[in-house]
Length: 110
Length: 116
Image 1: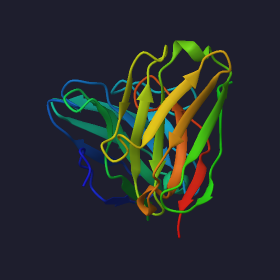
Image 2: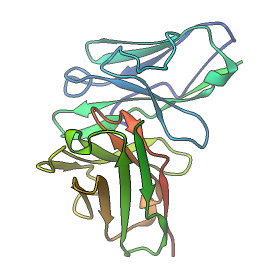
Image 3: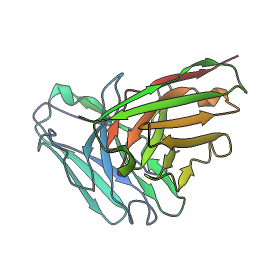
């Protein structure tokens, strides 16, 4: 099992909003920046959010990130069928001195 | 633009060794930490190792500690992963990624298959 906990799956209709949670501890999320990644089938992960809530250039503002305590959340508004993918959170764990990822969340746009 | 191109993957038998390379371009290589992340077939992302921008520090996942070695050649803008004593459970796509964090830019990955 992963150090960071994500729901295995979420779903919503096109145009709707969805949130994906990522739960950790004081040694990882509680102390370090969180990143979020989108992975389409057969492709490499793509950075969506870094430093908890910043978007790289080219990432639409439909994607947002937040962090509170030992949890982080990815929000996606105006869902599109092209958003169907696996989403991962990741951060550094200061106690273990390793990087850690969530188990991934499969987003289905119904 | 940032480019990371992995190479060196293949099919090997348990107990054998393999060295992966990652050629970097489009950024000042020696300014960034570099890492390896792997993904077993049908599974999630697993962080493998990181090396600081100057090579002064290296950290490994427990699953590979003592068997894998991360290194870099800043004169060649290249990252390496030496993998020894390979096991079936090391079968995965191995991604090279650039910091900061657990991956700001990613390569397309190279497949390593360990099978008898």
